[in-house]
Image (tube, rainbow, N blue to C red; front, side, top):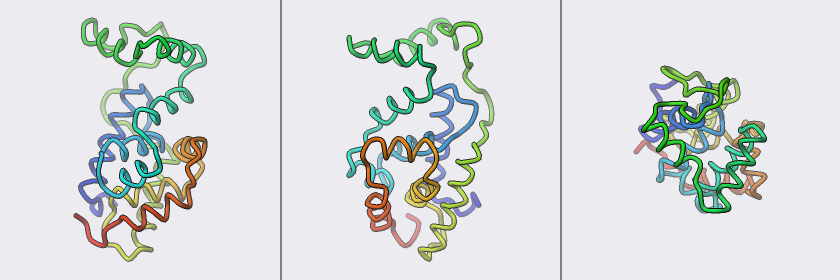
Length: 184
């Protein structure tokens, strides 16, 4: 299936792996794919998400709040209210003292090597292929990946979007309108 991926879809998968590492998750989930599609910054998926008012920083924050332990979420939110970005503090500390320097014992470490896809993320990839074929395309691009996320509809990515008030049907129609008939 990956041989059908256009450059933007390949880049989204690479970025999703980076997002999973940054969040210290042992898998690539639908949320990481969504963040990656937005982080890529251009193309049908990013353009449609931005048109709906979805921003990378807001999305990342909400996903972080939903995936962190309650203590981590409270600390991060409290620090943000006084202008301290916990992610920047972690990055600076780890740059000086090594990965996991601030982590209490038992905290998740940054995954190394290949990070597998979750079952839902694998389903998104399969659905992206189906979306591409149903549109008569011979490639899978970032827009098709977003269509897969929307069609799967049960993952954290869809939940965050609907919690934000994004109408998934409107987003879907906008993405389809923006997808070019041929790979760029």
